[in-house]
Length: 120
Length: 115
Image (tube, rainbow over all chains, first blue to last red; front, side, top):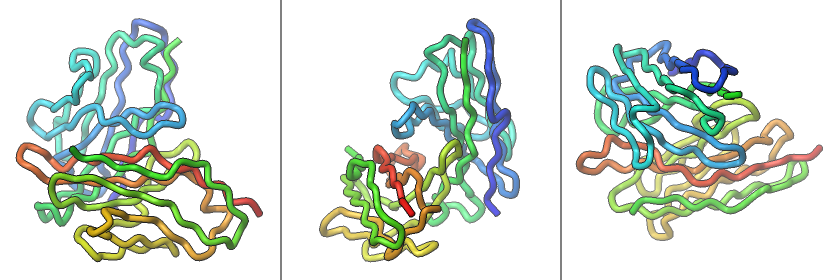
């Protein structure tokens, strides 16, 4: 149980185009999903917290107009990188919190396999 | 503030050696503590967790004890295998007003196990 998928796993695009990444919780409902960015040999940087049915909460320094997040259902959140540029190339990872019982006892996050974005 | 500090890697061990990866934290509330593992080219997998002081998390031969007095959550394994080669992340989540329990990660420690 507690499987999170991401699609696509790898994408290469031209500078100026937009790319959408999907994050799905396959066997549980996730009212909250998180989007991270990971640079080579670096830790994960939280970009935003995505709550189902409401606007995402972005971390300081993350451009919300560039990284659009939509959490339209309890099992799907999407991250759209708009007008991508080479500096946006990175490994993007999502996570979902299994919130079946509610409360901090279920605060474990389950991570997707990641999406490698390369902008040419 | 809340932060996690891990020992710097890479850590290189021979198969069947004993492993310790140090992790210390600072937190303003009462954190839950986690160890995640990332194999090359993959996302993170939860390895173990502890939600309160003196709890011991364990999985696949790995274990870590939540030590409030030393604010530590060191990862240990008695006998490592080549297949344990990966990056290990220590993390915490703290529940505070307006905080949805987001994870704060350490910088990661690369483990290389040689046959």
